[in-house]
Length: 170
Image (cartoon, rainbow, N blue to C red; front, side, top):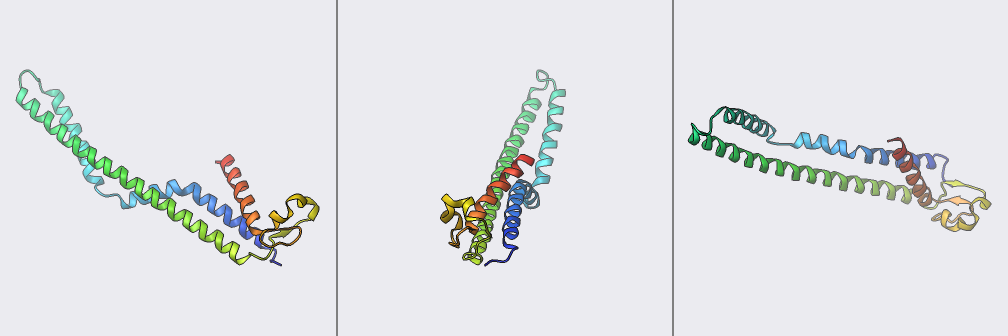
């Protein structure tokens, strides 16, 4: 028979996993900021484009057409370069988010499998058989004890309940 703390260990693990899942976007944003490169170049380009646009608005197109056209081509060139920076930054951000999500699900699976492995034969709690009579064998899986609630059933129920509560709160 499992000790009395198993149900709280499983519930705590499920709550922790769901809280971390809620924080994944913040974690990925933070890591993206840490690993982000060329931020200064992008800021410089944006400032340079603004300055050139301001200068362009002060030039009379009819009187100084050559200067106006050169400045306009320069603005377009820097704008295209900025677009490629933004596109690469967006793809890098998507990769970081993808990797973090994959790592989270791998770690969650390892945690849940290790809990199931450790407490496989023991029920998490024992209820009167009448309460769960039509589903007794399924609820007791994998322990098989009459009236027992197996760890797999407890994990599923806790995960759904905690997810619903956190969704309602957040």
